[in-house]
Length: 89
Length: 433
Image (cartoon, rainbow over all chains, first blue to last red; front, side, top):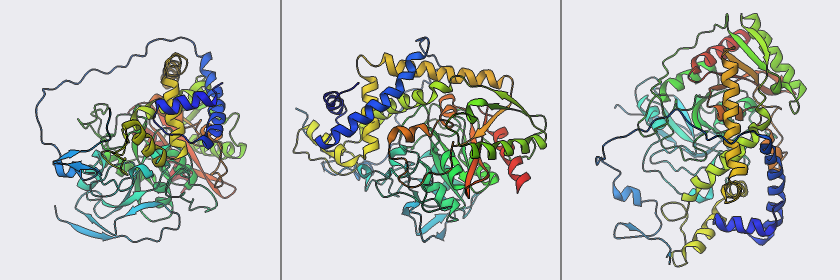
């Protein structure tokens, strides 16, 4: 069982932003879905999954990339060829 | 390249398109001048690409997805971007920020999802073929619901470069069309190795469909005809399978015991991958602007609350929870073991049979708003997710009707035997034509 407090905590971890009026519905739906996921408790074993893939290595060579102005075109806030972001500290 | 223009201004009564190129340029090649629609989670240089989400409104990719590059090189006219469930998260195309797509066979019903716009554009005769993407059935479900053909290729056969990621380990770009030949032709164009997607294999597809199933052994899993599957749908599909027998195939009953865990394994895996993949949508590099005067977390939360729809937020939170400290072992680890069991079940079956067949979807297309509860929507994916977990090719081909709505026959094959899956669908299609 997850509680509204748990959902609030998860929303915070995920930086998803949750409204108080959504909390009840989300909590209810989470419990129904997580209850269904409990079927996985019956899966035997916890072996580490291995894949038959090998690393693909290459030399670190500079190749042409997209022009800066094209990359910046979708950014809302920019200055001197850089993207402006909210302050972190 | 010699350039021509195709004019494309369709009425769109089904809301299949999110963006339309009224003058679509095209060149020479295998698909010269053929109108092709592209699902809106596949990057198209110069054409707005939103994943049907408000968080990408206004985003114009500066580059083409590999599959789109190949389309352009083959002369195709890319005529528009198709509606979908936001970021591919849904089974009905109702989870679009820009309104649902309607099913051309009955506009009171959903087209299926998440590639519902691509399916409706093909079924509604607006385009001859379209690209979709399939993470847990998102090509095959709408193909079945709209009465067209759709293929999820073997994982690694088509590059995912430029596909806006939702659940990388599961999803593939694939072809949709009115018939098997068109689907095969489109796969010829988009398949092959791409060094920008390290999960691609050097397995180009150069096949032309052959209508021959003589001597093929087809496994019929009991789980595909069991609880939750509409008996009328099961009946239509059984009739289709007996048609394959008349054409020279043999059938044998079989079982996929890991199906019991498949849906949970799928939803745990895809939500975990989504919680990581969708962290990039922060309103800084693209999409509606974050308020840069605010602190990082406040600005980020505000953008994501306003930009993501309910299902996307639900899945991001579920994945965040399943990966969080103390729950990882219970959910993600177990889901990966279950996934290996599904793969092992298919490997075991494919040592005996050449193909596995059953219904694509357990029911016909739902009515709009019929599946309002998330879990009941998830449950309808039960017959399509196993192929994604196992990475195997799977096609849906129309095989009859129930209550005047199309039903899809699903044919799954061994990894990289997309050719055989296509041949079998083609043999069936030619026989019932």
